[in-house]
Image 1 (cartoon, rainbow, N blue to C red):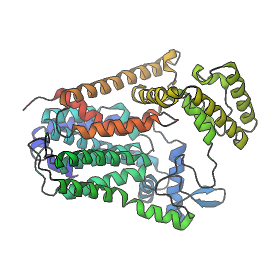
Image 2 (cartoon, one colour; image 1 turned 180 degrees about the vertical axis):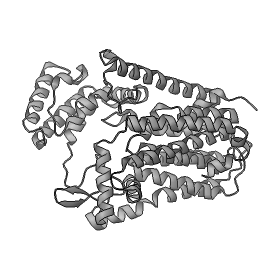
Image 3 (cartoon, rainbow, N blue to C red; image 1 turned 30 degrees about the vertical axis):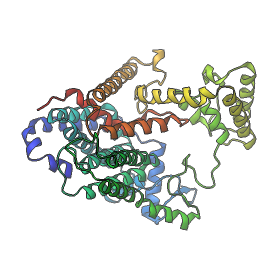
Length: 473
C-alpha cells in the first residue's frame, strides 16, 4: 500500500514496536468480533445471492423461485467483492469475507494515521492509528458482511489522496495523478453505496472554495502550498472523471438490460416492478427521530403488523389523528405482506396535514433530532442489545455494552470537536468540515436514522480527534 510505503522507512521504522503492537491489538479485536459476533444479515444474503448468480449464470440478478431476475436495486461494488472471494474461497464463505474485511480495516488505520501525520505531527499520527485500531464501531462492522468497512476504507483513501494532491505534508511529484486517484477512490465508494457521492460533493465544494480564493490572489491560502486556478480546476475535473467513470458500465448495463437510465441504485433500493410506499415514508418523516422507531415501525413495512402503541407521542398530535392512524394501521395489518395503494394514500394525506400544521418540526427540528441520534446513539445495533437502553431493563451484560459504547462514542465525538477547535486554521481541515456538514445534512433528510450511516465520517472524526495529541515537533 502506497500510504504505508510512504511512511517507511522513517516513521514506521522509527516507531516499529508501536505499530506492531497496535496492529496486533487491532487484528485481535476484529478477529474476536468476527468469530464471536459475525453479522450475516438479510442484506448480506441478498448481496451474496447477486454475487453467486453473477458468478454461476453471468446474470447480475436475484433469485426469484426458479428464475433469476436482473436487478438494479443494489450497486455492483459489494456483490463484485463477494463474487471475487466466493470464486477463490468457495460459495457462501462469509468467514473469508470477514477476514479480508479485517485487512481492509487495518488499512484504514494506516490511512488515518497518514492523514494525521500530514495535517499535524507524528505524535498525532500515532494517536490516530491507535484510536482507529481500538475503535469498537469500525471493528464491529468489519465483522459484518455489509458495505461499511469497504466504504470507510475508500473514504479514507480518497481523503488521504486529496491531501497528497494539495501537497499537505510536503511536495507531491504528480498532484494530478493524486487527484485522479482521489476520484477513483470516490468512485469505488459510490459503487458500494450511492451516498458515497456525498464525498464527491464535499471535495468538489472544497476545491471550488480554493478556486475562488486563488482567483482572489491566494489570500489566506497558506505559504506551504502552491496552487494556481488552473491546477485547482484540473484537479477538480480529474476527481469528477475518476468518480463518475466507474458508473458508466453500470448505467449502460441498466439501459441495455432493463431499459432504464439508472446511474445509481434507486432511492429505496427497489427494482422497477416493486412498489414504493411513498405516502407511508412521508408520514414516517413527520415524526421519526430515532433508531428505535426504525426498528419498531419503519422496518415493519411490509411483512409485519404495525402496533400503534409503539408510536412516540409526537406522532399523534390529537385524538383525531390517533383515530386516523389506528384506522390506517388496522387496514394495513389486514394484509401486512403488501400495502394497499389506498392505505398508502391515506398515510400521505395524514402526512400533508401534519406538515402543514407544523412545518418547522418537519423541516428543521426532526432532521436535527435525527442527525443527533445518528451521531450520539450507542452503536450496538449489531449486538443483541435492547435499543431502548435508557429504560435500563436489558440483560446487565448488554446494558453495560450499550452504556459503554455510548460513552466511547461520546469520547470520540467530543475529542473530534476539541481537535477541530484547536486546528480549525490548519490548511486542509476545511475539507473535513465540508464533508461532515454535507453528510450530516443529507442524513437528516432520511426517514431511517441508522447510526451506521455516520461511520463513513469516522476517518475524518478520528483525524480531528488526533489533534488533541498534537505537539509541535
